[in-house]
Amino acid sequence: MSRKILSSSFVVLLLAAIFCSGPAIASVEGPPKPGYVGVEFTDLTYETTSYLIPESVKDDDHPTTDPTCASVSDKKCDGKSVRFNAVMPVCVNDSDINCIASVEAVDVSGKRFPASMNGYFPSESKTAFAGDPKLHLPSGAASSLWSLPAAAHCGGTNYALSFSANGSYQMGDTRIQKNDAVAHISNLQIRLSPINIVSGSVTDIGKASGIGADCGAPNQGIWLCDKDGWSNGNAYNSSLTPDWANFHTDSGTCAVKYPFPEGFRFRVVVRTNLLTTGWLHGRLADPRVKITQVSNSSIIDVEAAPLIVSSVVAFTPWKDLPAAEQATYDSRGSFRCPNGNALGNRGDLGPDPATRSTITQASSSGECSMLLLQTWFSHIADKATDSNSVWSLRNLGADSQVDSDSNAGMDACFNDSSSVAGLVTTNSTTYLAGPPVFNKADGVLTYKVSSPHLQPDGSIFKGIYNLALRSDVARCIYKFTSAPLSASIEVVSENGSQQVATTSMSEKDGWIYLSASGFTYSSPTLKVKLVQSKVEVPVEPAPTALAPAASPQVAAAKKSITCMKGKTVKKVTAVNPKCPVGYKKK
Image: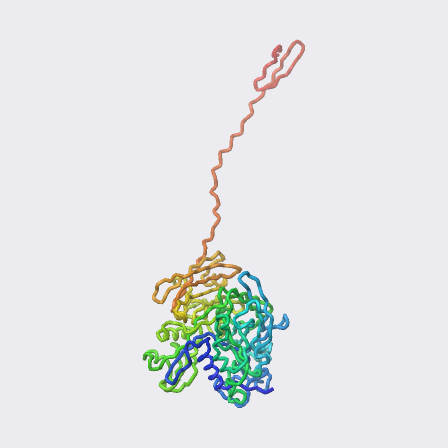
């Protein structure tokens, strides 16, 4: 079977089709001309296609032959370090690991509607690969399609589920000699999307503006496209263009993403042995997550409603950026973080800002992404360019660490990979994905978020924040005993003023659930303080004075006398004996 990789020219054309037209991210068009700089905060970029390649193949390589492998024993990968993205399949047997077990919708009454599996997209992925259980390397298939007629959306009844993991396997690992080396997992993600499969060219589908208009909700852009088993989700470019040069105009099929229907929660259950960190984050409203350890794997059971997340895609002439902002970009147009790292960008990356045109694709989480968004508030009038409904959950990532300075000593509480320590979800455009920072001085957990103040229609964007913390983790942080806990949640604006927000706290089944909603952006800080209830110590009643015991009464001594009447003799015994009438004492 031959394999060909998506050409770099197609990547740019496809992304241009998505960003420049269509109602999903159409409020700001793509780089209009040379000399512009832009940003993209959409939280829509995620891995949708499987691949297994030698680690020596770099992102910007243009190999003349297909570098992807069908397995680690494939001659192109055999004996080599590899990189991979595995979109995991649906479970077939109860013993299967690294697979999707079930999907269902839950309505407002609590009634559950199991979804039926409806194939894969693409139906036969050309870059699928077989995993290796000994290496904890999952099999890479394609996104699964699920039918949910009870939870129909504007585009139909189909939903696409991507349960993916990416990482690497290092052949140079000295543990190989012990036969216990396993794949290194960087990220694990579950993402559910309402979709509709549409036939046509990528360009035409990307420009379509009426899809979904019949029910009053526009589509949210192209989720994934396929042509004969090849999809635009491939992460590696090549010069193999014969099948791809005209893909953006040739006929194919694309999965178009739609908003979630209102009034439903969605539940996804997966089985995996790839959970690498005890902290999760994502886009879920009122989440309930249960992790069950079974033998050497975990069952992850997630139920939640989707969140509406504000997006920003904007451009401005380079010359209009203040000098201080221009100084934050390097010679290739990449935004430089204070720690020296650079955020990824694309476009014409020439050295001359007057002729190049670039866009920085920022992650939804992280200090650097938050900083970049905040510098752009003035260029977008603190207003989002679009919004998307999202249902997703991901791990913190094996390469992401708890801030050792801010959370010194807390690693043992947060980083137990054998079980999930906590989960944070929010509708903020950008946020900090890790555990809240613990301030020992005042005993407060702080969490930062940043998002445009206004929605695309000009209305105020109201924030949502959910924190689920395992009860024993909270007690580990605070050194509490097993007594009941209570909490206070405070939302503080960037100017230091306290905001009015609806907050709640509950403790159930070994978890503490905290939420805050109704607060406003741009960059508030949420503060949570847990307090332990005073333990009621039973008070023993004071001893009462005993009444003096009554002295025992001494019985009076009795005497006996003899009485006679004629010849009759009678003996009388008493304290004061007397003879009966007619008798005389002898």
